[in-house]
Image (tube, rainbow, N blue to C red; front, top):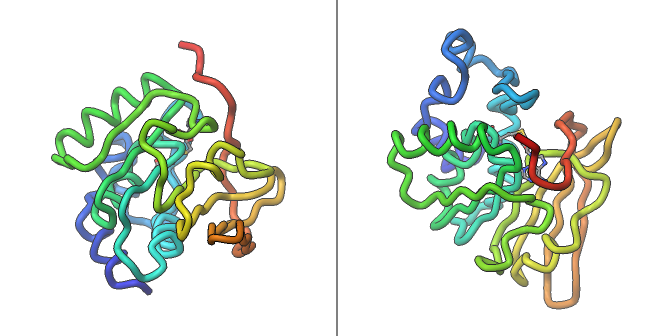
Length: 192
Ligand code: SAH
């Protein structure tokens, strides 16, 4: 329902992010395979997570864990001043880099690393989004969240729910929302 998110999604051509054979399905509300056993979330989910992250205000510095094909990062680039996105699968990231360069998204920085460690050199972040599921929040990500910041991720393993964590001066507040289904977060960089 957030008009700013809808405009951002309108500005990003989704068919560029999937294999050519699947391009005709790129605008259906479905998740699609993006190679290396990973998936691009359905548009409704990208919108929902973007809306929860934004919570009605423009975003400053955002960290995404799980770049994948880069679609969520490209949507975030419309909503935030700066986007950092980390992916553990090298060849997947190489393809995504080319794609985002073609779209001339100059405020997105990609990094091949283990996202569970966050990105201390660019912290603190006003918002953190993890697009793979975890049973609990990685402690380094909690530390790298700015006071007043918000993090969203799919919490759980077999059964998962969207989890929003807000950091205030006193500590962290967790809210559990919709049931979801994401691939699991894995530790370490993928072997070539
Ligand atoms: N946001 C993506 C969705 C990608 S699916 C998009 O719009 O396409 C989740 C991604 O998280 C996968 O590409 C997977 O390789 C990545 N991932 C899983 N564990 C990770 C980790 N520890 N660090 C970085 N990326 C990770």
